[in-house]
Length: 456
Image (tube, rainbow, N blue to C red):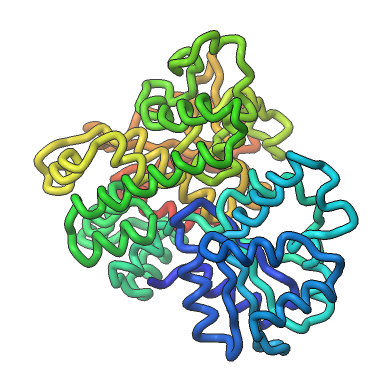
C-alpha cells in the first residue's frame, strides 16, 4: 500500500548523504515500507533483523571503531557504493541486549562504541547508505549518547492517516485535490461527495490506520478478521510493556495503558489517577509512566495550556493532560468490540463518537507534524479540545461528533469565550460531520478536512 514515507525515502536517497532512523510504534508499517522501497530502488542491499537473527546481536553489539564495523559487515557480502544500502531492523533488540549487559556491569563496553554512534563515520565515508529502524526506540536508546544533528535523518512513522486510507481505498488524487480546493477557498463540498467522504471517514475512525488492519478490511470487509488483527497488536503492546518497561513500573504502566479507552470515554476525557486500580495511587508520581507509553509510541499526550499565545509551551501545564491512543482503530475495538462496530457501520446503532473523534484528530495532527499538542481549560471560560501552533499562527479547534442544532450551529461557548478574550486569535476551526460554513472568525469544517491541517 502507498505510504507517505515513500516520498520521504525518495528525497533521502537523492538529496541526503546521512544515515536514517525510522521509528514508531509496532505494526505501523516501518519494515514493510522500507523493504519495498529498498527492493525497488537499490541495486545492492542487505537486511539485518535483530529480532530474528540472534547471532547478529553478538556480531554488532560493540565495535572498536569504524574499521571494526566494516570488517563485520564483510561477513554479509554487501558491496560498497552509493547504490548499496544496509537496513538494520528492530534495533531495539540490540540495545535491549546491551542494556542488560550494562545493568550487570556498567564498564562492560568500556573502550568500545555502539552501532548508532558510528553513524557519523558511516555518513562521512559514504561506503554504504544505512537505514536503522525499530520500535520503542524512545525507551531503548537511553544508554546511547549520540547527537544525530548533521549526520542522522530521523523519520517518525505513524499509523496510516486519512489520506493514506483514501489511497488504500483507491480514491483518486483528483478527488482529493477537489476537496482540498474547497478547503483552500473555504467553500462547501458537493453534497454527494461530502456524504461519501463522511462515510469513508466513519470507516477510518473504526478501522484505524494500522496497515494490516486496513488491508484486511479493504480486501475482505470482514470486521471479525480486522478485530483479530487489532487484538494481536494490542497483545504485542502489552507484551512490550512486560519486556521493556522498568520492572518496578510494569504493573502501573499496564494499568494506565488499559485505562486509556475508559478515560477517553469519561466526560472530562482527562486522566483521573484515582480511577486506576492501584493502592496509594495519590502518592505516586505518574509522569515517567505516562512518558514511557508516549516514548514507546502507543499513546499520544495532549497537555493543558493556560493561554493560547505563541509559543504555546510557555503556558503549558504538563501535570494536566489527556492521553490518546496512538490508533483510533485500536480504541474503537476496545470501546465497541466487533459486534458494536459491525452494527455501527451498518447503521443499526448510533454511537457517541466524542472520544473516537477527538482521538482521530489528535492522531492526524501528530501525523501531520504539529508536534506536541495542547488543549485549553479554564474554570471561567471552559474547555477547548485542541489549540495548535500552525507556523506561529495559533488556532483553537473544537471537535463535534453529533449533528448541529436546528439553526445549523453547534454550541461552543468555551470557543466563543476564548475568541472574544484573546485578540491574537484570528480564526478557529469546528470539526464535525457538517459541510463547510463560516461564522465570523469560526470556520466550520467537515471533519475529514483534518487531512489538510498540516505542517509537513
